[in-house]
Length: 177
Image 1 (spheres, rainbow, N blue to C red):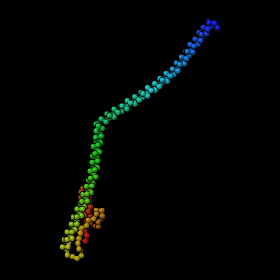
Image 2: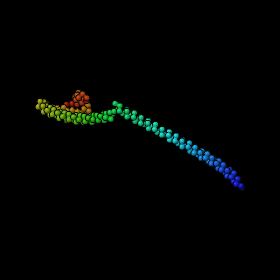
Image 3: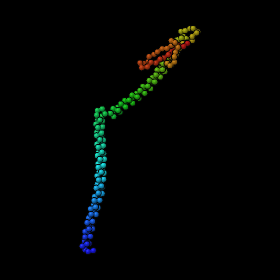
Image 4: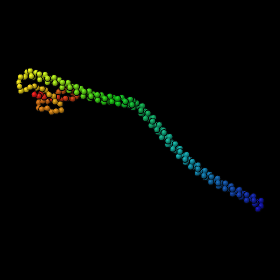
């Protein structure tokens, strides 16, 4: 080979090398372009997700603001205070009812004890006066008996006593010989 041929051969090789470089660049550019497209798609997806999250955040902030405004309205501004007040009133009312029931039971018991003592006193006086006044042999004494209000007395022996407007108690009296 001659020098001239070698130069021509080198020129061919350089041209071939340039073509290969262009081809390599195009291939690289295609890969970069593909990667660029992928990165752009990822960026778009992340941007969409970020916008969605920002929208949700703004929506939650608006809801919080609306709820705060609602809580500051007159109807709800003192709701907790009013609830506590009503709860205390209800509790006091229930406790008062329980106390009144207990006191009523104690008072009823005291009245019944007083009544029994008075009836005993009346029966003692009846016996004393009966023996002093009545001189017959057939009846030794008379007494007044009170039956429980739940028992049913005989005919003509029922006496009602009104002990209050709310409830009526029935005391059954009968005389015994």
